[in-house]
Image (cartoon, rainbow, N blue to C red; front, side, top):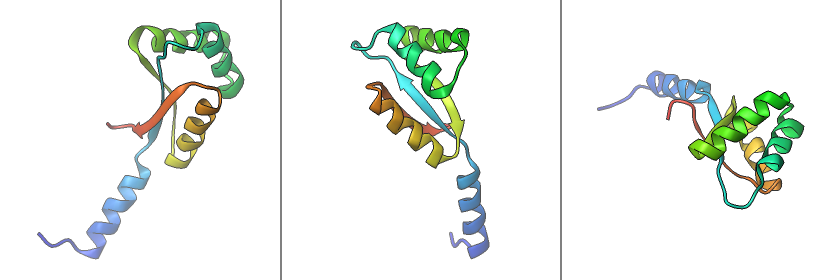
Length: 94
């Protein structure tokens, strides 16, 4: 199947418009209080929201902590690694 330049550009634009997510994963190292602290200090979440996300990480193994463009999510992942947390990014529709 041959694609036109217009269809390729449209597909690329749609791909760029797709939001990305930052996922924080559970690990056996970090204390729940520390994870809550990171969520509050880095993302600016309220204490109840930070605790809710921390419990989601703890009980479900992961939590989505941010949504946005790929570059923003890459920065968040790097920051989480800097805090010693396991994190990754993925397309929001994955």
